[in-house]
Length: 316
Image (tube, rainbow, N blue to C red; front, top):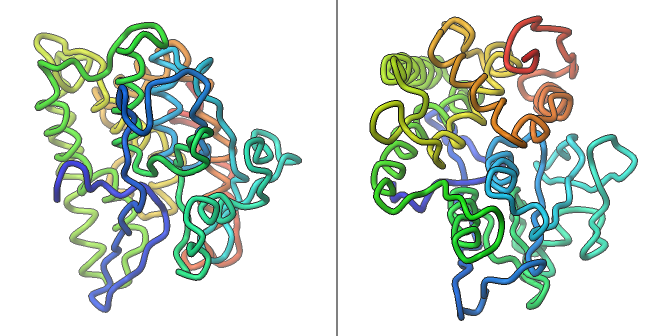
């Protein structure tokens, strides 16, 4: 897998092997100075779901880089439609209308960017980075969007900080790659497995990597960098999965060998991330929990939402 091929969305298909396959992102343009999508304030708009870990990455990055005054945001309802699509619902707490295009669903936004979208029977994913100037989607791959946000921050917008220092970019990309298939996507491969062997393979790889990360964080604060490390994109990409783990994945996706709270270093890492300026407000626990247990009827037929747990990132 290329470092730029990390898939952003929740729409998937299962092959005959019983293994979960995540689809690729369709829009892969980039913001760059003097390019088609130039560096400008108040030109770009972000569509997200609070429930989605991939979209959550972009909200955290906006907060940490001080870009929230330069990029506007709309939030879909936490209820995913039966076909995996998203709708806007301003009556739902924490969700919004589509304030840019006036669409009722994210499918309408995608169809504006590509008029054959609806006929293609594809399903639009979050996050979506929209360009007001050209009325189109720039990109819908979370990993590329957060890297573009760093470009904006380094171009005079935001607070001038960086989450991808040039000297650490190789290490950041390597760490994100190492965590993606086994952890970020691994929880989904465990939860949506259709055979015992597929589940066993996914959950074993997941906890093998969590064990490795627990050791890696011994004496460190962040995943990459010298000494105790430096907060980077790699930390954000891991955090959004770990933050959902005890609340959702342990039960819903059967990732129950251990909880994150059972890993001292990983739990401390989660707490450290939540306490970074602006991060806590991006964690909408109701949207996260209700979305998974309500939306995935294939693994929770009666949409029962558990009362617990009483411990975890959501209680910090």
